[in-house]
Structures are given as structure tokens and as C-alpha cells.
Image (cartoon, rainbow, N blue to C red; front, side):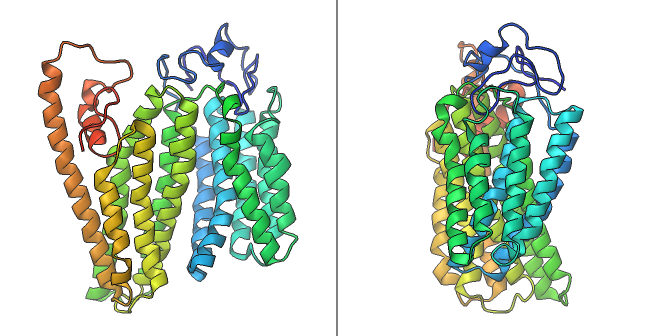
Length: 455
């Protein structure tokens, strides 16, 4: 497995400490590796040369646990999708998501393609499976199992990194010493106090990367691995939307109206996929590669931004379950809010990520989100097939508009690049990906060396 140039396979830990030897029994770090971890080019910025670090088979197997976990969270939201139910599902989803994030970060900064690394990932996977089993009855008799599973996962992650100095003074220490015990204690309490403690635990976990921001400056992240991992997790969530369509339709009569509902719902799912994977995914990888601070970029667009993206897709998936089974029924505000609110949140999150990456406004997606959210009261009490069809058309129109803008931006960029005598800046896209970067500029990414295209 390849690692970044000049960096030990083990690398520094996410608390900001550095190690003299690599993890997993590999050889000692070469001279200068710790200096790179402390902020030399290639650690925080994008100026240092990097080699590709790919996702391991153990990580992909680990993700299968979270396929099940997302299904369980969707089931919880399906049964209670009023505002209180959404909040309760989110409180349960955050520790599930943060367990995955913690495993992904430690796999990014060290070599996990070793027996020790694989066992650590699989051990966290078992704890995650316990958490997933607890989700449907998390506010009933399985709250203790959820808390114990999360705490066990955080203990395993801390033990994996225990040889690195300062591991307790960072996000992994917070998981073991603060949020884990809060989740465990909450599992012993009645529903009201339980929800409060679990919400507090979620707030502690989510704020830890910000609180320990200065210590995390020393962490050397692999820019290729992190975007790939979070894209895969979003793909897992999008898979749940397919399950929401297929599992519901499988028991229906499948007449013409029901098949039309399936087609409309699938079009919506495809539209969400298109928004991310056609242009945004490459733009995010480009942003991390050339960022002055990879730490901040990863925290903002991956750890925080993808929490919103995945939560939005889960809401849409649950909305499919409410609509596809009986497309002739009139939908209440809860079902419409899941579909349109989830889609609106998804689009608005791209506005946030674009601003975080390039300090530019994603006009098309913000406008589209505003239109979708404005349609919520209009769609209440409408037949489900109409609700699905209108949302599908809105996403198709958005993707067509963005495609046209991308093509125009790419066409305009070619003569400009040909007539320029200025050499390509470090970190800009190579010619082979000019179309992708131009497209990213029109949507969520960069044009050329990180400059957004005109809106």
C-alpha cells in the first residue's frame, strides 16, 4: 500500500502527537517524517508531493456494518418522522456516524493494511454492529447496548493509537472519557434524560475537532484516501434510498401508477447521485489536495458536511417508503417534509461545502434548494405520485442546467488556457481532467488552479 512521500506508514495521531516509529510493526520513520507531520509541506498544505493511498479491503468490509446501521436508523425515522422523531433519530445517528469517522481518520493517517490494523477495524465493526442492533429500541430497552457499543468502539480506536504520545488529549480521548460514558449513562436513564445526555454526547464529539484544532494541525492526512472514504459512505446512504424504493414496491400490485412512482423515485435518487459524483466528488478531492490547511478542509467538508449529506439522503429514503407503496394517497406534512426537506438540505449543503472550499456561492444549488423547500406547503395533501414527479422534474432540470453551464465553462477555459503563457499552478488539475475541473467550477469545485468559474 502506498503512502505519502516522506511520511511513515503509521503517521501522527489525530490528537496532534507524532510517533518515532510507524504503527502495525513497520519500520521506524525516516528522517524528516515527524517534521512533515508538524506542518511541513504535504502535511497541512497541498504543496508537498503525495502518493496514492487507496481504501483497503478491511475498510470496505467494515462499511457493510454501516449499511445495516443506516437501514436501522431509517427504520427508526420511518416510525416517528415528526420533528421530535427527526431529532431523536439524529441523536442516535451521530454516534453511529462518528464511530465510522473515527475509524476512517485513523485508517487515513496510519497503515491499517496489517494484521493489527485489520483486527482493529473489525473490532470496531463488531461494536458498530451492536450499536446497529440497538437502534430500533434505543429509546426503549436497548439504550444501554447502544451506549456500550459506542464506548467499546472508542476504546478500541484509542488502544490502536495508544503508543502515540498525546492520544488522550484529542478527539479520541473525548470519545473514551466524555461522550462514551455519557452515552452509557444515558442508556440507564428514562427517555427524557436519556435524550438530553445523548444529545450532549453528540455535541461533545462534533465539537472535539474544533476544540483541538491546534493539536490537529500536526496531523498529516492523505488527500486521496479521505475523499474516497466519505464518497463511499454517501454511496451507502444512497443505496438505502434504493432499498426504500424496492422494498416498498416489492409488495405492491405494480400497476402503471405504481411503476411510474418507482420510476420517479429512482430518478430522484439518480439526481442526488449525479449532484455529488459527477462533479462535487472530484472538486472535494481537489480542494483537499491544494488546501493550505487539510485539517480544516477535512473537518468542514467531510466530517461536518457529509453528516448533513448523509442525513438528508436518509430522510429522502424514508420518504420513498412513505410514497411508493401507495402513490395515489394524499401525503401529510411529515412525508412531504422528509422528501422535500431532505432534498433541500442536500442541495444547501453543497452551498456550504462550495463556500468552505473556494469562498464562492453555489448559486444554482441554493436557488434549487429554495424552490424545493418553497414547494413543501404546496405539496401537502397532494397525491404521492404528483409529489414524487414534481421533485424528480426539479432535480432533472437542475442537473441539465448545471450540465449546460459546465460545458460552457469548459469550452471557455480551453482557448484561455491555450493562449496563456503562465505555467500551470501547483495543485491544479492536469489536462486530462480539465472537463471535470471546469464542471466543478460551475458547481462545487474549482476551475484551473482552484479558481471557481463565474456564477
